[in-house]
Length: 287
Ligand SMILES: C[S@@+](CC[C@H](N)C(=O)[O-])C[C@H]1O[C@@H](n2cnc3c(N)ncnc32)[C@H](O)[C@@H]1O
Image (cartoon, rainbow, N blue to C red; front, side, top):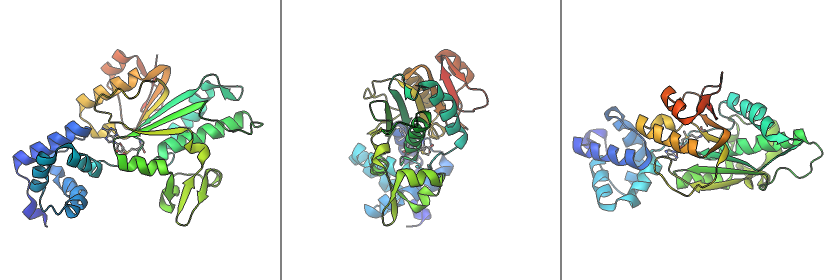
């Protein structure tokens, strides 16, 4: 198949991008057909589909069973350990400092990594919490357990959540952002991969959750919500709705942490009682 025999008709393009936007928030423009072609190629090969028009036909026939495979293929999973280190320094120095007294938290800490991808984000958070607990109370033999800290890690993609839950990382993945000291402490080497320790795994619960569609499966409130590098893919309307929902899940005084190039519009922060944290773009605190 070549791109030339794969030209999407206008109505099929509208149908496809409309479906994708409605299903996961991802906004695609006409000049991104190359992205559709590249990302959908493996599915097309596997299902013997020769053109994007045929993809649309199949989508119309099969609906969400095929639609989920399309979404899985289209979303971007780029992530790394301690991505944007400044944010994680703030998390340790400002947030954990406030939540801990005399070596342990006053109440269980609840953290949500919304759009966790392959798990580097929630595992980075878990490492910092264990490190902080040990440093604050060096005599503690038992590290922080799930009765003191819960990390909920969610994503729209079942495939990437399975990988995250397995906690196995390639040599390439552990070389990106992970300090050697933490690698030695929290990972075990297998043949071609590194397996994360149970001490970290036990703090994290992985669940499928679509940020752009209201679902009632999350009932608790959180001290901190990380929602990084996903809102950039949504249109303004979806962004506003997602931020509203995340705000409702924050405890008073809690923090919402977006990607460093993701912002909340001034009029929305006023409505939501969120204040931007000075010098830390993307971090907001709820009153
Ligand atoms: C670029 S990764 C960011 C991962 C991590 N937060 C980070 O900053 O390193 C974006 C993740 O968002 C997920 N995602 C995309 N649309 C979503 C949606 N509507 N609901 C939940 N997760 C979504 C993707 O599956 C992907 O794993």
